[in-house]
Image: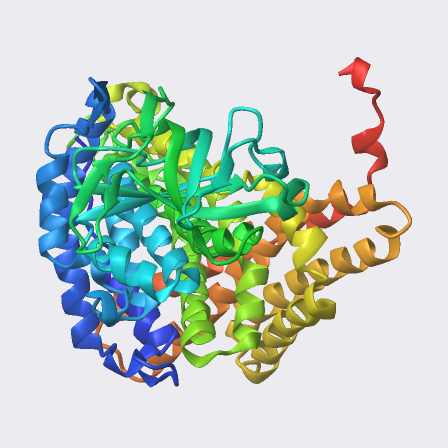
Length: 592
């Protein structure tokens, strides 16, 4: 059975050596001292390793089941969820006014990674609840917040987001679910939603569904969509549970992965719902959930890769196959361990350099969210808005790829279920699809985010990279290994943006056909920037006499690998982009 150990040391390096969190001028960051964050991560790691990880294969094998209208989760899930709640983990970064601990989103992100790596399907129950909490917290009335949030913070009640319908996924303007106004101010919600993660289960007393629906007579398309709170059980004025609402589970979807999460078809039959915010402005409220969820899904991509990588390293050290071509490394045994072979090393280095770079990128993104929300910083809000489709799209594509790479290290055993590597790949696969398929993320990046606020935010990113390179140049080795590769990759990215500007107006397909390559190019530049920052922090630590020399030298070697072996992919993506739309659009539909 696969094992998992939280990478607390690497997280501490990011929080304190790279981001210097406790020194930041963000409210609450002064509490993020090294000893405090270390204690939190150690405790989260124990729960993950001892409780959640052993349940991961259980959830995969058993799945969820629907019996007589009740959804049952896999063996051990309910007890583990109680431990999660009792430890206060569900409330870590929630508002103290509603029972939360008020910690920064950054710390919640670090802890979230640990739980996702250990058991992605399980963590989704609280993850979806956090997203629903955030939407109600941002857009709900004071009465709604008081009624629902305390129990959602504690996960006595869990939450969902209901967008997709059988006939429409991304194009939500086509939805048919309707909400009919009632005299008492409530609405009767009717329709069917599919692919609803954690749609129903036996681990909480109530499920608070956030449902997108159209009020009859409203504007056509997406402009006519509103958001509603539709609880499984109605909630009385005193907070007690009332009658069962008109919402039921039609079936549990049979999926490729995340079997431990109950992905449901939800039927609404004149269910009582309550409007969040104003009529026809549901997408604005739902995007509060979706932006947070997209960063969380980007995290899922590399978190699954982290767990797969850890096990691949163990296997590569234990499995004896062949001899090192430069001389036997295990002369007393029948063969050398896999890890001596250069191609295995390449595979593992691809995984390691991606995971550590993606973790840095995600933590930085989480700090931007904190700065935007706690400081009211519009520039930080714009920058994380730009980065969100990159974090989601690039990291889930590469995360799945790295899970497959880890599986490959095992050879034939990687294809056998008892080794557990298949589950990492199957679970990671959904992250490329849900919360907006990655092609849509690329279109959002190129079609909306690049030009947002007159291109202000992408120019700010380029300036940030340029300033970093200028301020930290002068060391010959660091310049060669980190600064110069980053400058070249950044120039490739700027050249791609210029191509879109020059060609996209006369033929939008020139931009759209290159959008996916642009998203990956942007992801590589962001990870290159993160590796340059990590390389600088490691170099400074060594210069200051750090005791753990091996850790920092390993960090520099891993960074050099990324900069020399992965970052040059920007050149390939630029060549594809500059080939334009003609090769992509050459065939008539009938010729595919």
